[in-house]
Amino acid sequence: MSVVVVGAVNGDLIVRVPRIAAPGSTVIATGSSTGPGGKGGNQAAAVARLGGECALIARVGPDFDPASLSSVDLSRVVRDTAPTGLAVVLVDDAGENAITVVPGANANLGPADVGPLTGAGVVLASLEVPLAAVAEAARRAATGGWTFVLNPAPAVPLPDLLLRQTDVLVPNEHELAVLGSPEALLAAGAGAVVVTLGAAGCRIHRRAGTVDIPGHRVATVDTTGAGDAFCGALAWALDTGHTLDDAARLACAAGALATTAVGARTAQPTAAEVTASLR
Image: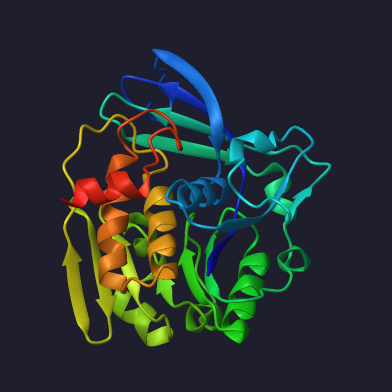
């Protein structure tokens, strides 16, 4: 079994600020740093950090450093002439963030880059890459018997066919406001909708009802990448045979632990750390 991640790879410029600036205002930063990012890269790194086999489908620029994803299968990552994507991440004193992304090479990922899926496992995709590539990944997952997990971020209205091919949809509350109610998404064909609720955990919506999974209390430093850690852990847990409820419990623990250091990947946990947190 394995996890295939379809998504963006970025370089992150992280700027620490006392508060996120309002439109028309200026805030003096207290520091800055750089690091690897992008939802695809973060999610693939999260799976690998947990001990899972993971391959990444993405496009990067000539400036990409493969050492940032040394534990991930990069054989299906394409070198593009455009630069690697860039994300400017503002992090305030409460650990909340605001992110602006310059897509770069990510914008050129297409259906032809997805290619065949052999064996069985979980495909995890997000929307920092063109929807056509995501739709092709969903199609191949459906025809190949893979579980398809979609993190609809940043949120856009989703085609009905894509929803019907999605086994688990994982939006946060802001993304859900764009997509519609869980009930409507289920009626359109999604297998399950897992709404992440930050520190409060998540809520699993199925046609048979809902299940609340509690969050974990940690000393939050930076929430950047917490959703990616959640999604990566969810995919890893589903791939290793956990039920959706148990996978969501593991994912809540992983997402919480990922907020305990600055940067999208710095605090991504191991399986042992997730297990200890659940105890």
